[in-house]
Length: 427
Ligand SMILES: *Cc1c(COP(=O)(O)O)cnc(C)c1O
Image (cartoon, rainbow, N blue to C red; front, side, top):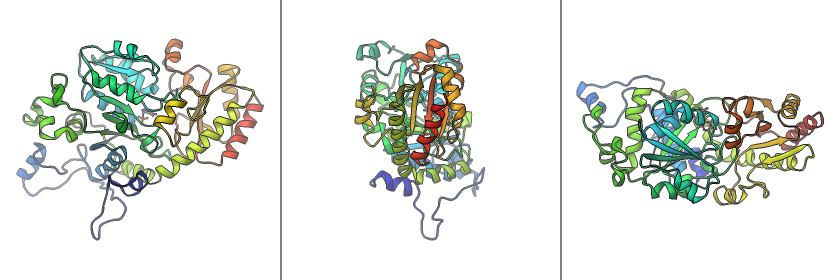
């Protein structure tokens, strides 16, 4: 399928039915799979043969959808997780252990920041956060001998900064470590980070990929390009025998194209068990089938709303990289030539109080802890997703207290603008 264009992969990627088989992907609603002999099953346990034996490790429905996402991203292998949080945790923990260090962009999703800054630190993994706008020297200074990965978001949630993927990839590769990019907001329809040098791509599929607010989920895709063996001393988990699988060395047995995802499934999914249910994978696939059609509309609505807000006297600032005045516009033109996404953030004159009053008066845009689905919604990050952060941390994450994050859905843009207009009048 990967010879086709993204639109075709959205619809038909990942699954090609044989004669007389279901046209739509089957939901394999089974925890387990049957074998005739213990020996056959044993070979699966030893990773000597590929096949299904227990849904915590692999399930056909999930594999069809993971394969579609891997094709869309231009990767060699993919896996689904129960959430975006699990995807980012697994992607980092698959290569960074206690005593290791990761360089992360500071403008990242609040949940990911918490995961890195608090929870993974408790596991002994240290993080250095750098501004997406850092100079090459500042980025260079963030690395340590024990650095194992660099992390960033293509379009940051909610700061809406655009990652200079090539710059971060170059720095990561100069230090012999991979770049992990969370591509949730851009989706592979808008940007394929692997094409720009990223090694691992993650997703909260909960957002645009599902796109209907129906199912929480995550995905990890490997580019298959990072040479673990060339940096074998840094990544012993991939380049030395795994005792829990009779001494398998992932990078040797599964090659560069399969090592990362096989290890992530065989060890982390086995031990932590954050699987996506096959039913949710089916919903996710329905979303993927129209991703290319929906993203174009989300982008059109986002741009119309951003332009309206920018010209409104009660609005202090609008952050949307498709606006020519936005500081990230040049990066957006390079990495997101077909438009960024439907999420626009803005600050009202009058700060937090004005933002709250405005949001309470909206009729179409509901206040929700969510973004990136068909229905327009909005949120004040400082009082919700980012409420654990101090004022300084909020500033570093690009989230001033009065910021409103508005996720433009698929409604009529005229209706959305009329709703914004009446809510602004009342402020
Ligand atoms: C929502 C989000 C996550 C977390 O995903 P969940 O599916 O909610 O666990 C991670 N990264 C980004 C960019 C997100 O927007």
